[in-house]
Each structure stands twice: as C-alpha cells, then as structure tokens.
Amino acid sequence: MNNLLSIWKKYSYIILLFFIIGGLFDFRIGLIAIICMVGPIFLSFFRGRFWCGNFCPRGSFYDNVVSKFSKKNKTPDILKSKYFRVFVTVLMLTVFTLGMIQNFGNLYKMGFVFYRLIVVTTLIGLALSLFFNHRTWCSFCPMGSIAALIASFKNKKNASSLLKVDSSCVSCKICEKKCPMGISPYEYKNASIIDKDCIQCGVCVYFCPKKSIK
Image 1: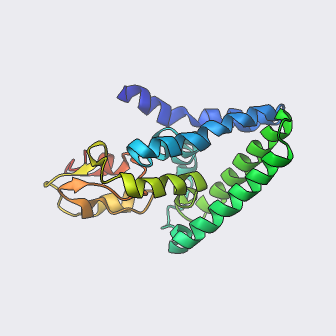
Image 2: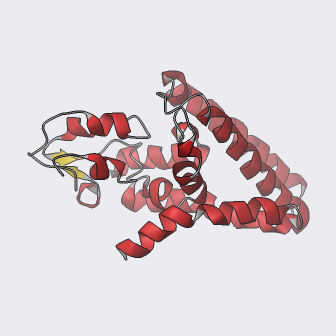
C-alpha cells in the first residue's frame, strides 16, 4: 500500500496535465475536478489535510515539478492569515457557485467553470512559487482551508492517525526548514503533529536525521 501511495504521489501530476490539455478539446473533462474539491473535505474528517499532501494531483505537480525551480522562500504570513484565507475562499466559491447556477444543465459550460477554476488557480500557484515556496498556494487553497478548519476540530480526536514526534527529537529544526507548509514539527515532541495545516506529506519524516518522526 505504501509503495502504491509513493508512486501516486510521484506521478499523479500527470493527471493534472491530462486535465489541462484534454480540457482544451472537451470542457466536460473539467467535471472531473469535483473529485479534488470533495476529496480533501471528506478525508479531513478522518485524517486532517492528508489529501493535500498525498492524493492531490496539483500537489504532486508542485512537489515533483515546480519544486525544482521554486525559490523555496518562506511563504509570507499574510498569505497564511485567517482573513486572507477567508477572503479567497469566499471569493472563489462565490464565482464558482454563480458560474454553476448560470450554466446548470449544460455539461460543457459547467465543465468550463471547473476547468477555468483549476487552470487559473494552478497558474497562480505556479507564479507564487517563483518567489516563495512551491506549496505557497496550499497555504490558502479554498478546499485546503476548509479541510484545515475541519481538521482543527478533528485532529485532537484523531491524533492516532497523524504524524508523531518521539522523545529522540533533538530540536535541530531541520524539519521546520524543510516543511513546505512552514510548520515546526519539533514543537510536538512526544506528541502527534496536530497543526491543522499539516498536509502529512512526510517530508519531515524523510529529512529528520534522528528518524524521530513516524
């Protein structure tokens, strides 16, 4: 199972490329995007933002392609602030909802609403990565923000399914430097990482010199 997940995380960005290219020929392909809108919210009730770090094809694109030329600078606090995230979420959901209402029943036009949303937001994330971290978009992604909100209530109850930091941690802070979401795993020594924005991508696990994160 872990091997399959690793392969998916590494290559699922191909689905995003197919979506973008294929959508140019048939906008109905855009309707597939509903999976990536419902998926992270559904899974957040059980595993927090696990979808964002493991199943999201766009996340795979940022991790495996964009990260190679990203500046990897810290994401500005304003882009991670509650008010900015609420603003972006409300704005995008409003535009999306109005588009679906206006075109309801027409699969081509409804597909275009999805397609336009994914392409525009992917380009925004791509542009931001040229100046900041390759996962900057994920700091205020509407679906990710909603999932994070749910996770803030659920993570403590579902702590057993989250990443954990054991007592061998020496607080070297390498995990913080490598975390694409700007989280400080070492602060959760002898506990589960219950930060609502932890996407459980496993980067901290990989780079921990003491193998203290499981």
